[in-house]
Length: 124
Image (cartoon, rainbow, N blue to C red; front, side, top):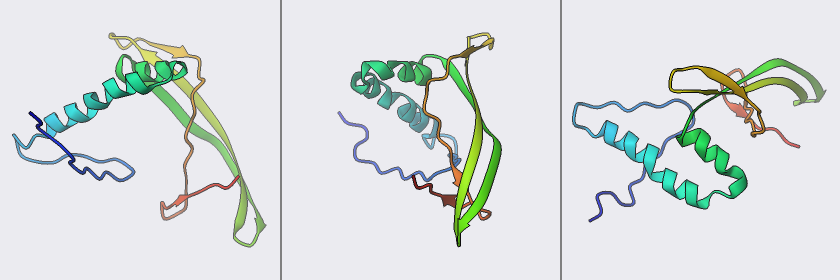
């Protein structure tokens, strides 16, 4: 028996929420989204990335990433050189909420937005 199949769920960037009356399957959808991919991810992940699956599903892992400093200069009309100094920490919390810092060897995503909150894309 198949309960769900080929159901589109377009979710754009940013924060989203689920609104609906009791019984509208909001919690069920969140459980499906949170657990369905886990088994597939564990099977498909190369051994060197297994720790990421643990960070996502087995532990409480927090990333504290912030731009510490940003400088820019115009290099030609409409083109800018941007330098960003980033601070980052990876912290794991146990079941009592006690945190310990972990080595950070993960990729960190940095997004840059203009004044209208439109994402700007970097060229290398």
